[in-house]
Length: 114
Length: 110
Image (cartoon, rainbow over all chains, first blue to last red; front, top):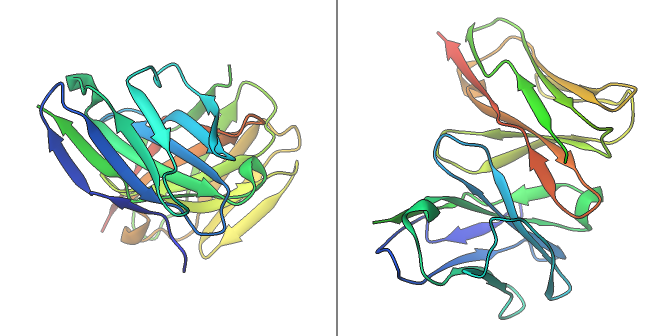
């Protein structure tokens, strides 16, 4: 069964360093999303991406964050200069036709900023 | 902004018992997603409901969306240890995103 895969599963980084979280969405999906979940809190929307551009972003998604689809299969989230409060589980999701269809989530990358 | 309230926040149920989790929206829903999250893991898609009065079932889990499309319930029949986890409802938005509730933690006692 097709699935969204994320790498790495766990990333530890020093404050101020750049991190890139990688996602491989389901191959025929056109809409891509990043969400995050700080430990003990709810899953929060970060950004949606369609047709090679950001279609929606939240207040959390400031200038420190960027997304890219560098090739036909990967979808990346970059945090330029990590802060302690960026520590969270980051989930990638994809859907075939946007909000009319199911969005499937990856297993997440646990980012720990020290 | 869309607000989703889930109740209860947590639930402890004896194995074999039935249970219901509720999700209430402050606005009419275009659609409603139910996901399950095991502790520290990803979100597993359970069901999506779009029509008022719609009901879907998957194995022992049934979800309903009320006629006004502002409330959904998730019902588990004869609960098993494998049902333990966090159940999240998510509101479908026209601007291509899902807004999630805080989740209901379900514990199953053997």
